[in-house]
Length: 101
Picture 1 (cartoon, rainbow, N blue to C red):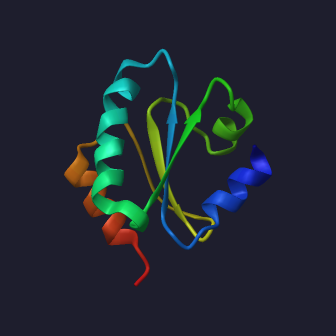
Picture 2: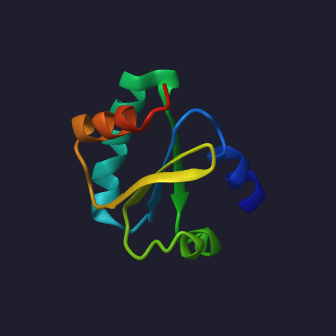
């Protein structure tokens, strides 16, 4: 997963990574919000869901202490991160704000 993950976040398209867990209530409420963001932004963003229980090394590499934690990457660089549930419009404006023109 690790090398593959590096390739995915090195994309010129912004990649929003959602670190989540199956047992996490807020993570479940974030899932449909992320679907709406993807539906609205289409090809402008990639959304990647990482289960912290199945990918503990990756979660610890990015110091994910709580779920959900979202990290926005572009060109392999971390542009933004936030823990907790955000609303669709907030996420869309954050993604658009960080896009390289």
